[in-house]
Length: 408
Image (tube, rainbow, N blue to C red; front, side, top):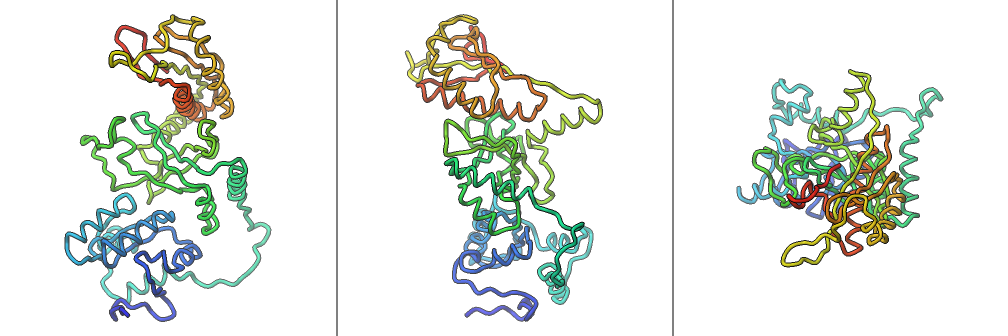
């Protein structure tokens, strides 16, 4: 069997050495169990081969919820091309740095000199990986803190499962007003919760920075002037108050999230939800200002079939005309019911001036964040409901230069 070189061999009785039989260390060892018990959240990964064991370990670690750093010049492959391919395969799952930067970060001082002696490296590793032993004792009543938040989230997961929900959709709205989301099976969330000390719903997924402000609505091609890439990722922190079971996809619940820097934990400046929260906080603290906001969602209904190559509206009635209400009664009734199932309060529905155009008015609310969530969910519900009834809902500002457009 392979042996470690004397200079980097683990110190007997102080450092762990785990034999593995798989490409990824997480697949054939109890490493994840050990790290969870040590309350480890960040991993620095190096070794060989870059395009095989290292890449596999990085991807699995990221999927398990760890914040991963790959040390580029401490990894090796059979050749330079394989090394580069391996590093490319870890993009989006980890950050890539050099040994010098890691040593500076581990020393706790970005300006400190690099650690060069093996003894110092062993001492640093020992201090990080081996917690000082403490006696077992029951905390005093004044020291006890009940983790009720975890319990509430666990109860929420059980309630979702009882309601037939199989998937949790973690969503954000990007700078181009596109809903972007990733889905985690409910069973996976429960497994991760039981294997770690984290909150059951905390930071389960991440999305690359480029998805927040660097991708247009029509293609997955980065806008060059954005200077954003898929290398840096942001972790999604869910807002439990936004969770709704989707009536148009009843096996799925969606929860809106804020995006955070995976290392500093701070809300990213690219996060649209975080921007709205900062604006509200600034208005409250600097100007003693609060808001009460409503929303009027305008959209146009078009047939899926085209005529002479052009999409056709479902009608050409005028403002507040009953024709649209009569002809689209089934659609309107189902839309109203589905919005109600998500606690989205509708104040008014009427035909607007544009062809096939309707306006849905949401009730005023002093909870601006919740109203913003309601708008996002309502638009998604309108699109899904229209499709079910053989139509397409358009929210474009203008569908024709000769007719009224859509606003919010």
